[in-house]
Length: 296
Image (cartoon, rainbow, N blue to C red; front, side, top):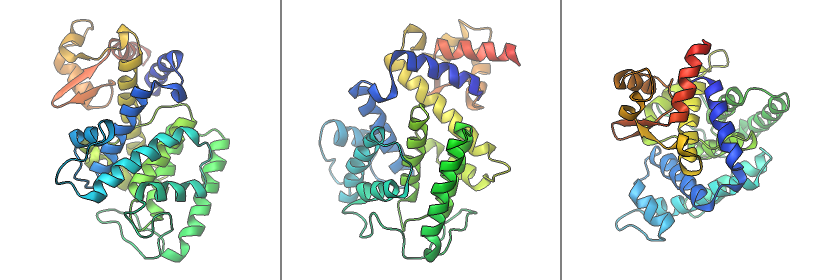
């Protein structure tokens, strides 16, 4: 995914509304989608329809574990609070963990006091006595690179991977790490990204493959996720050029057939949202993609 396309889509979004002033229904839907996705890839039993009942209607789905319902409510509140924070510091890290897992984990809001391994991961977390020092270094290094103006996606990938490597909590590291990643994007005036269940395997693989010398897989995943977020928000607050359309409709207003467009969507080259087996994009995103081919 070319960043030039992402920048054009972001520019269109910011011309219409600032990220801190998104209409409440739009922000509520964004926070609900993020909450459902981040919990689902960690094994939550709360499906999207359940999340809608809990967060939009105030209803508790029958037969769902109390802790899953509690974390859904508390994560959504923590996500919505990201707009009010600017500093990426350790106090906030602990605060977010406590807010999301209050009443669920006995050590909510505390650094882990046990040694852990990450099942199926190549990362080796430090021993428990080294966690706080490593997190101090994480905070200082992030702040330095942020001040120096490092590329948003490069810095976000490093920050997120390093947080997951340290694994500062006994549980809940993925969800807190993704909240912090979205705080990073919001502070850089980019919308939040959502890691959804269908992306789980690719997400884990990109974390495993990440190195400082080769951050491409994780960066690419973040860019594709950002494209989806931009399309989704523009569909809600943009013009007729931002309405999501099928690839069949897209083929009628572009030089490319439906099969070619589907391939480019699956490769992460054309900004798109996938609904079931169908891809959807917007006339604006399609135009920017066609223009980018001419610039290559």
